[in-house]
Image (cartoon, rainbow, N blue to C red; front, top):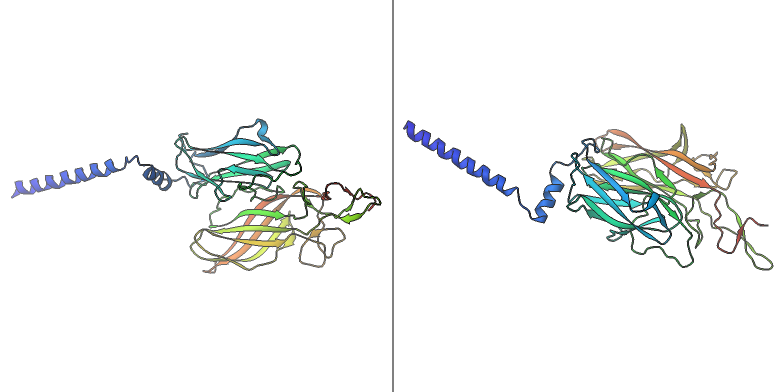
Length: 354
């Protein structure tokens, strides 16, 4: 009986060894779909690159310049902590308005997986003169992001329509520069994007800073005719992402310059669904009510605040509660540029005798 017991134990051990060998023999599958799944689902770096993983944008142009209507190539490289390429990692890229992502572009979205060398490659084009931010990030879980500035040079020629079907342009109007990386701060709720709008630019006029003053436009007719340049008040949009397990409710939104509140947003409260869902909150940034200038900040009160020309840093702040009653406050910093912009149509002169 003792010998039979040892014999059975040996059989069990042998069967376990064979099963273990079979298990490991299955992990070496070279099928592309299986490789992609393993690369995506196994051991992502979740500490914002602190483990040594990197994502880097490379631009094939001296000083990262591109002319209006011209194209240059770019690459995004993703590597693990040892510097080896990470393949089959999805990379999403976007830009401020002024730079178009010509390729990759699928339904206006620049999304592609890294190849066996850890690269995503494509091309960008210059739309309007100025300096614009380009941002690329790895898929959720890796927390890898890189930003660079693209300088567009030259002049917008009559008839130039940009690059139809291209991606990009969703980081703002070339007038907002994010100061805070879009990385979850740990509570599962964040402001994932900030943008401002200015629909004042006339047809054929390049994108510009937010216009704060309304000018008269004098044409070349005899006698000349004076009209007003296109002029609208501005809004801002915050994209709120919720990665928590419950729905959350945004209660207040503010914009601060230093310690003073310059804007009290409209359109709250807002509910943001759970599980990676997003919601946009749009508020009134500038107004012409209760101020002595063409535009002032919309404080929501009787004495709205002056703006001032130039680029300044602002902090966007949201507060809210979860379904469980837990409160939160989330911030994101951005720089906004204001100026007295000439949006008069071609062939007219701003303020000359009007």
